[in-house]
Length: 518
Image (cartoon, rainbow, N blue to C red; front, side):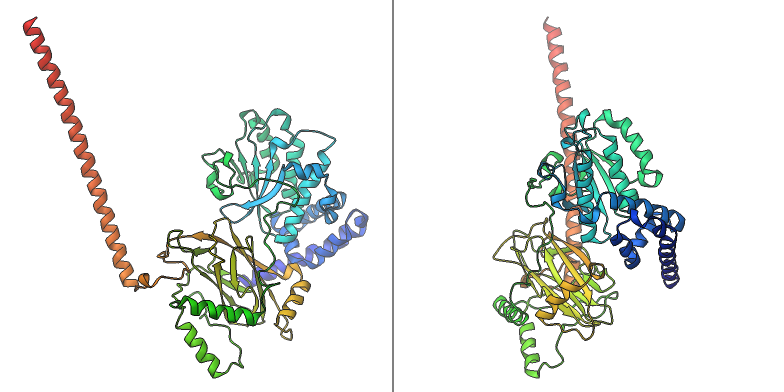
């Protein structure tokens, strides 16, 4: 079934390219940017995104491509840069990328209160939208985005239906398959009628992507860590320019750092210094057996040395969650779990498994390079092999839920070298479309959480049976507490009833004696 779907998809892509070249490019070549036409012939994902948005109907897809390509040339999208946008617009902070929603999608913020309807500046504002979307599209290569319409403190002079329609068209026609949802915060009641029109522009299928929220509902879609205080969040972020506010992942941690051999030496020193730290491999039916990446030329003495080092390491408990990418399987799938704040930050593990027949180069980026040590952070993985990456907070710095890690991977030619110089040159030359990317969030939990990669303390190094016993005891204790609370509530209710009856009886006695002696 999967093979048939792949064949049908390939046929549709091929037909779309052939017909667009024959029916449109030959007649309208001057209306298109040659770079877009060339990309259409080379980038399968791009063609597929248009087909997907038009339900694989080639005729409709061709019309959409025509409209999209003409718009891209009209706005000079391929050449948009900071210098294309008036500086005052960039400084204003009405439109920018920052943070993620709960599904891991990037947030495009549109602060409506900063938009004043003005025909003289509308084109520049549209270019700013196109600038951010194109910048994001080139970097993320198809990952959806969530639009945050912040309408707090919005007045009538900010209502600009032409601008709203342009934004909607960007996702309907110009950037298909990119829209995750539109979250509308604190919309004034006076704009209800206007958004009925907006719904008609979106069409019935896309209306479900509109999420109207207030401070009470917004956290269904975005965690407090990426919400500003006026939305009930805790994000201390304040917009400023320059530089561009983008929340981008930083340069790979080891690119200008120690070479691989120094990394290995440093790792051994850390391990020996930790004393009790060991690695425990947990089998997973869905995941191939994990093995350390080793060189075939290693000597027996090196093996013995590694065994001694392994015996001194604390226990890692590998997660059951696995992200199954086309090049690498990555564990954990979504979140890196660290130790609790009370017990101190602890190391965590990322497991990469090569599922291809070629060597896969990988590197790790983070939004907070000053806070973490990652070993290795720029290396390669042999076919069928696995690599364990240790992540640890640097210098006692604390893990933040806002921190993100990005795993980048790409296949290498069998003849390519895998030394530091070869890897550096490889990443300079590899096309963006050939790079697999996967993001991981950071999360701080107690060290006893069962599906974490946390390095365990020796006191918590216990069998699964013991854990189950403790779990059952905890449940029984909670049940006893609930019964005790129920009894206490009934006792309080009885006491209150008794008190009420006493008061009534006392009142009756007082009134009786009062009537008797009056």
